[in-house]
Image (cartoon, rainbow, N blue to C red; front, side, top):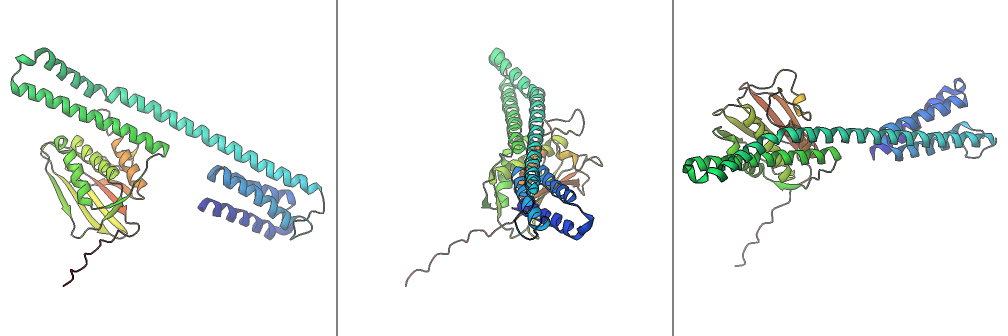
Length: 345
C-alpha cells in the first residue's frame, strides 16, 4: 500500500511544482517533471506503480496545464500526441526498469547458486570423509576392534552425519531466504520451550561447555514460528561451539523490554574482531580463511529474525567473547486461557 501512496504523492508534488513555477515552466518542462516521477516509480516500486504514475501524469497534465484549464477537455488536438507520448514513454520506462530488475535478480540467484555449489563441494568433503573412513574401518576391521573403539567410530559417524545435516539445512534455508520463500507460521509460545529444544538438539555439539540459562520472571509469550526460532538458536549455539574452547561457558539470557523480548547469547571465546560486527551476518563470511563451516549460519539467523520483524545484532560480551542479541516484537494479543466454570453446588 505504501508504494501506491508514495507514487500518488510524487505526482501531486510534481503538479504543485509545475503550478508554482508558473510562467517559468513551459509545457515540455512539466512533461519532463512527470516523466521523472514515472522513472522513480518504475525503478523503486515496480510496474504497477509506474503504470499508475503514467496514467495520473496524463490526467494531471491535461487537467492543470492544458487549455482549457481545470477540465479534461482538449482544445488543441496536438496535445493528444503529447498525452500518448507521455503514457508510452512511461510504459517503456516501466518495462526497461522491470527488465533490469529481473536481470539483477537472475544474476543474484546465479551468484548464490555458484556460491552454494562451491560451499557444498568444500564443506561436505570433511564430514563425508570422516563418515567414509569410520564406516570403512568398521566394515573391514569391526571384529578386531575393542568395544570402546567401535563406540568411538559410531559416535564419529553420528556426529559427522549431524554436522552434514545442519549444513544441508542451512543451505536450503538460505535458498528460501534468498528467494523470499521462507514461510513464518506464528504460534504463541514460551521462549523457554524453544530455547530448551535447541539446547537438547545441540547438547552433543556443545560438549563440555556449560550453558547457563537466565530467564527473567513472568516473560510473555512470543508470536513466532517455533521451528524457525529453534533453528536460529541452534545456529547461534553452533557458532559458540565452533569458536570457543572446551570448558568455556555459554550464557543465554532473556528479558522483557518495551515492545517485545530480548534474548542474548554470550560466549567466552575470542570475540569479534573490531569492525566485523555487521560482516558476520553476511553470506559466506568467515572470520578467517580456516574458520569452520560454510559461513551461512549467522546470515540465516538474521534472516529468520527479520522474517519475524525482529533484529539480531552482534557486539562484544562483558566476558570478552561474542554477544548476539535477538529482539522479537510482540505483535497482537496472545490467546486467552479459558477458565473453568465453578462446579454447581
